[in-house]
Amino acid sequence: MGVMRRREFLALGALTALSASRRGRSAAARSASAAARVVIVGGGFAGSACALRLRRLSPQLDVSLIDPDDPYLTCPMSDAVVVEERRLSAISAPRSGLAHAGVRVVRDRAVGIDAAQQRITLQSGGSIGYDKAVIAPGIRFIFGTPAGYDEAATGQMPHAWQAGAQTQLLAAQLRAMADGDTLAISVPKGLMRCPPGPYARAGMLADWLRRHRRRTKVLIFDSNNHFPRQDVFSAAWQELYPGMIEWIAPADGGSVERVDVYTRTLYSSSGAHRVALANIIPPQAPGQLAVDAGLASDHGWCPVHAATFESQLVADVHVIGDACIAGDMPKAASAAASQARHCATAIAAALEGRPVPAPDLDSVCYSLVAPRAAFAIRGKFALVDGEIRQVAAAAESAADRTPSAQRAREAGEWYQELRAQCFGH
Ligand SMILES: Cc1cc2nc3c(=O)[nH]c(=O)nc-3n(C[C@H](O)[C@H](O)[C@H](O)COP(=O)(O)OP(=O)(O)OC[C@H]3O[C@@H](n4cnc5c(N)ncnc54)[C@H](O)[C@@H]3O)c2cc1C
Image (cartoon, rainbow, N blue to C red):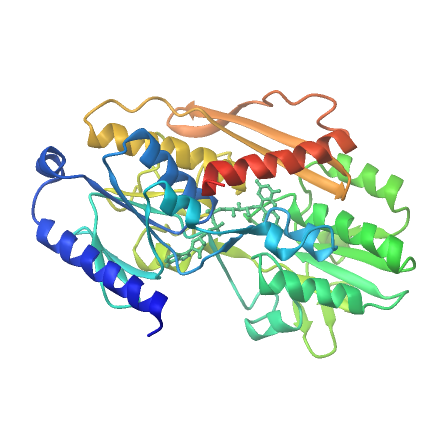
């Protein structure tokens, strides 16, 4: 065991012993004598923002955050890394900001939740007791769709839908393309992380290819009949990359049924398509822990009480971010952070015996159609008949719907602000 690992192990041991000694006392009794314990699993945008907000709202709370990874690599701006506009280090968010704010960062993986004992078990063997738990594990990929696309296939046909090694692989394959080659992006059916993401990626890759491999084509195989802001994306592609990007609807063979990893061939109802680079985005579901802990419904995602983000299936456990069912909210980093802020407010209120204020939720997605041209998709959400519903197209203006350099600059500023809000720097 290295020095860091040993230190972490000792800290975790102390934590486990502390929580064990507290076991059996009610949260109310504990709050009178000791800090109530909130344990957060997953330190992405959702979990980290929730931890920071809880510390700010109630500095007396004992807040722990469990995540095996440090630093966290953000998916937002990861396509900028693929096209050499940013370095990987520019999308790395270290955990030091959380620790600085008084969050106890536990570098481990949660493997189970004992809801009866209110304990979270860890891969390293220990466990941590909680009064309230927040589960924010993001997504996992459903392999086998298309047929032939398993975990090993990601080494040949990257999804790059999780930032890190996959981002670097997509970047390397892009650079290895020859002029005149074809690149394919396959979009899965159904709910997914960052719904406008594949189409923004198509523009970013096309911009790089236009400058470096100008005769290359980008094919988007889509399992869906429509996509967000289809009119805006399509007009931008026509203007910026005439004849270069082709969107293929399901009826025209857009739904990829099978892949052959070795020949880089995609099979759909329109036949076999051999390409130089295949970016296959598989269907998605909540992180495995959510399923193992009984937080996911038959639909696959995690149902929550919209007013508090507490699980509908397990008491005192809240689910936020991409893993939860949040009505009309998209699976986006800005939405995850907004849910996290409200969840923290709800938990602090519950622990202090105060009523929970009505949620006031929002999201903004800046979609880059080229490194220096973006448009914005804004949403504002509230409780309507117990569900999270979009209440208006927010402050979305005509300027938001028109790709511009101004919105691209704002996208950079938004990213920096969101990082500060979620990771403390
Ligand atoms: C290419 C791309 C571009 C995107 N661009 C944008 C954008 O411009 N704007 C935007 O708003 N959104 C964007 N998104 C979406 C955004 O990345 C996600 O919506 C956001 O990351 C969701 O946050 P989360 O905290 O729910 O999950 P994640 O960010 O995935 O974080 C989950 C965390 O949980 C940890 N974890 C998982 N299981 C366990 C466990 N068992 N124990 C401990 N820890 C665990 C993981 O290590 C991870 O750190 C983009 C996504 C992609 C793929």
